[in-house]
Image (cartoon, rainbow, N blue to C red; front, top):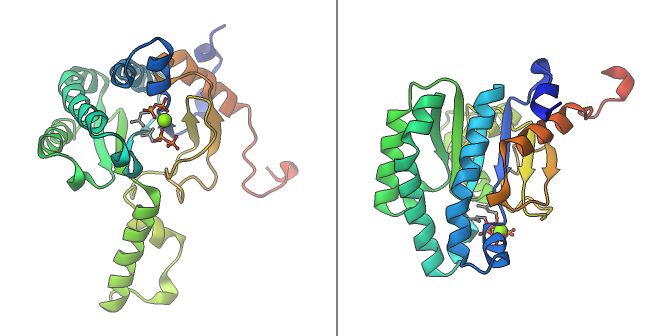
Length: 245
Ligand code: IPE
Ligand code: IPE
Ligand code: MG
């Protein structure tokens, strides 16, 4: 029986976050340039999106470009930005056929203007889709996100709009870029690295982590289903004992 057939419909993660890692190493492994790996990562993005819609995952968040990735060679950064624009244009049909609504998190104003324009157009085009919310993390860094939230909250206190005593966990969540999106239930990272790399630090307090040895261009929807299957066989205790659940 396939992993998909073994999934329990009543215990699906509502939100899956992915760190799409290993494009460069995959390409190097077959004697190609790193950018070839990024280009081949696009089909894996499609696998993840269609897999989520197929089994009924409501939120998918993909780490596409971190704030630290700006420090890569200029040529690679430029190629990644170009790939983003071309992919968004080419995948319009995938978004519409699957009812995928696009949104972004991160410092979008850092991106080249043509990227910002294509993103804004695609967000607008897909705004009424209701099967799955796809969030692209672009020029995203979780620490900056927390700094921005802190500033916004401090400003409200300074303006007298908010009382310090009323600041709670919900206040913080509401001021993060991800406001309105539930915290991830499952986080998948490919490439064998076992780290978070400045991704959704606040939001992942109780997320189940899944690290795969495969490189991102090798990722298939069956890998997604297997990760969900493993997730369903874990016990999320949230600090309680097994007996209390
Ligand atoms: C992930 O693959 C894509 C981005 C970070 C943009 P990498 O480019 O990090 O590939 P590796 O990890 O160097 O193999
Ligand atoms: C994390 O991957 C960022 C993205 C996948 C977009 P990196 O390849 O940049 O992470 P590190 O540098 O190995 O931690
Ligand atoms: Mg990497």
